[in-house]
Image (cartoon, rainbow, N blue to C red; front, side, top):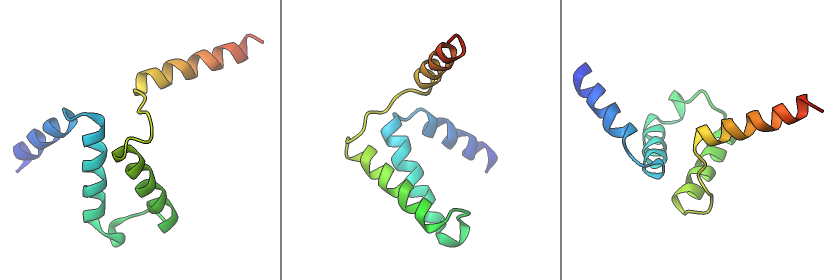
Amino acid sequence: MATALIQLERQALALPPKARARLVAKLWASLGDAASPLSASWRSEIDRRCREIDDGKIEMIPGDQVFRETRQILQKKRTK
């Protein structure tokens, strides 16, 4: 079982971002409301964002780019 889970995790992480987001949404939905520590409003927000990703309405930005740009903004504010 553990080996199969590790293999499944590797396969899932190798998927493109949109496919991973879709997989997360499906897995999350499969847990049902009782398993969710999130409020209904947060679940609704997550569903909305996943739909936007699936529909191509938003541009996905790689995490390393987000962190790099954030560091640059913070550095500029510190030097003022």
